[in-house]
Length: 98
Image 1 (cartoon, one colour):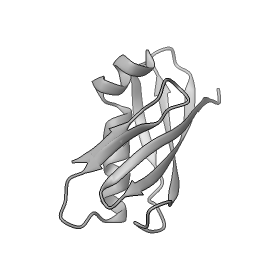
Image 2 (cartoon, one colour; image 1 turned 135 degrees about the horizontal axis):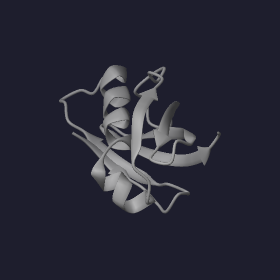
Image 3 (cartoon, one colour; image 1 turned 90 degrees about the vertical axis):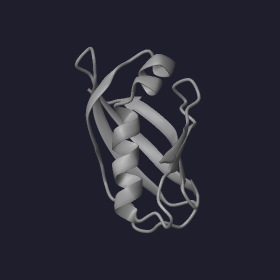
Image 4 (cartoon, one colour; image 1 turned 45 degrees about the horizontal axis):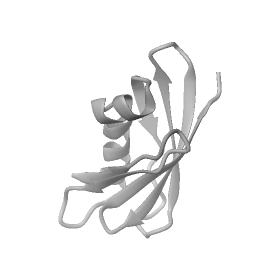
């Protein structure tokens, strides 16, 4: 499990990745799962579907990667996710792009 932290749409959602040694793919999958979660929907006020994330270049703290999703009103969003610990990510930014 990855630990998530989200601040109101300036987003600071953090998530803990469950794995002894999290891989790039683990971080990508957990970010996609979190963006579509009920927890984020309650906090952000939007339900997201179709989340898709780039695989991060490394698992090093400070590495950022991009994600996209569509909200329940049909708007497309772009997110920036940062690896903030050995098994933790933070959604640092979320913007409507169309």
